[in-house]
Amino acid sequence: MRSVWAMVCGTIRDQVDFSLMMDYLLRCREKGILQGIVVSTWEHEFDQLGDLQMKLAMNDVAIVMSPTNDDMVANMHANSVNYWRQARQMQSALDLIPTDAIVIKTRTDRALPSTKRLIAMLDEPDPLPLVAEKADAKHLTKIPQVFDHQIAIFRARTGRILQFSDFAFMGYSKDVRKLTNFDIADLTFTRGIVANIQFFIYPFIREYPIIRDYYRVINFYPLLQDLARYTEKGGTQFPKFFERFYAVYFGLLAIHFRIGSFKDPEEFGEISLPIEFSDLFHSGQGKHLYHDSLGVTFNSQKILDSFMEQRVEPVEARRESKHWWQKKRAVSVPQPVVQQASTKCVLSNIQQLSPSMLDRVTNEELLELKGFSDNKEFSPNRWLRIQRPIFAEQSIAYKSSIRYNLPGINESEQESLWRECEESAGANQVLYRYWLKHDIEPKASPAYLMSTARTDNRFSILTVTRLLRQGLVDTDTKSEILRINNFFGSFHVRHGQMNAEIACYVLARYMYLVENEIRIPSMSNEQTEYAFERFLPGKFEIFKSLIKQPEELVGFFDQAISERQDKKQAAARQRVTEMALEVTHNEKYWQLLEKQFNGRYEGYEYAYRYGIEWKLI
Image (cartoon, rainbow, N blue to C red; front, side, top):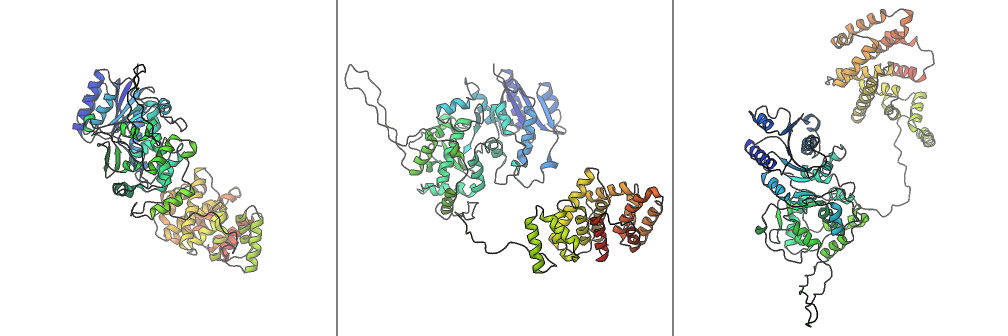
């Protein structure tokens, strides 16, 4: 015996709509049509709604309230915010529903008519046929079958691919679960893929790469109106990519989805054959096709099936037997044959659908699309996203080197250095070692140090941050130094790592922000506090209170150094001296620190000698 559950998802905006929906579903459950009802909404949703929650509980309606995810999605620069909210509620409801149940997904408002249509489908013996059976019946067994059973939907469209009404739809739990997707990479789509496209596109975009490319290459918005005008005026020419794409889309649609109708059968007129491909982009066919601002809607399953079942070649009509002894056969009326070349191509493609036809747009197709994009009768608007030319091949001539100019050295030195970089497995290390052995002026130094700074060379990060603090770098380099400093500072703090170089480049960044009156980010505060806890525990707040009082800061560090005079505290004393020099640039701290140099730590000592020589510290 099948189990059918309803899940009502969303914010309760209209209590009248919500009450009508719940009373209807409760009556259906009482009749045995439904076995369960789940309301999925946000925490605190019922706080201002009187005794509504109590009434639901009295009627044994399951309620799941999820914490909002606004903090996570509110600043997303994509069209996925609404999808994430809705998918969160759907997933919460699905977690409570038996995994083998048929699920009617509906919402708290404006969804009662479509919900009633879905309930009516349940009177049928098999309202959601197996996809495999549909594929066999339509001879479409060579394309991927993503669902086990069809999902019943409303308002399938020809321009907004895989956009259906999200007010209500119905499918087996196993298939509906495939509509919830939390892959962050996919959710960054900004191609006009609104929530009720996203629900249905995600199960298919990997198996059907041509669908991803349709949204990547085509801006369908202007075409929704332009193709209606074009086809109503008699336009019948379409790009080959469209003819291949729509064959794939119609095949996918026909086997995976059951297209429900909001209209009653008597409201429809007759379907007139042949149905040409161009007919699918404007209203017609006895209201089975309806065009509005959102493009053309299939108002019934019949219109799609009738289009796909047409023959490209004529079929002879069967005649009634002439002799009395021969069994009489009914006279069959020959089916009108499609006339337009584009229709024949789409239908032929449907009959030959295979994995190769699901592939991405080809260079030849893209080139033809460019030609159509120049045809103002097809569309006067810019609808092709990809405008760059396609190169069959490139000139083999190597005309000039791409090397950028390494500042501060002559052409001969540059040539030698570039050769060494080419022969080395690590050009960034070659540049760093060159800087280490040559007295490169500060303004030229970022060209030699930024590559190793990006790979966590602490002496490079320390030196470029000192350059930043002294105002010796351009705007772009300044931003990159701040990013690198923050990234590696955060990384090492998270991993509980802190040494002299990290502490000093964190401090150098902190002082740069203070001296330039830039708001201190929380991450910078956290990193600097961690450095103090490691080397001057409990002193960070005092440091902050003195930060704009140079003389008091010197006294603060002098006292800390004097408190660490024991031989066992030599390392601790050196760390505090390094911090003092970094913050105050007072020469006396350099005199103390230089005495500790013994030639064992080349990178460390050079970073300090270079800083002193060029007055960076």
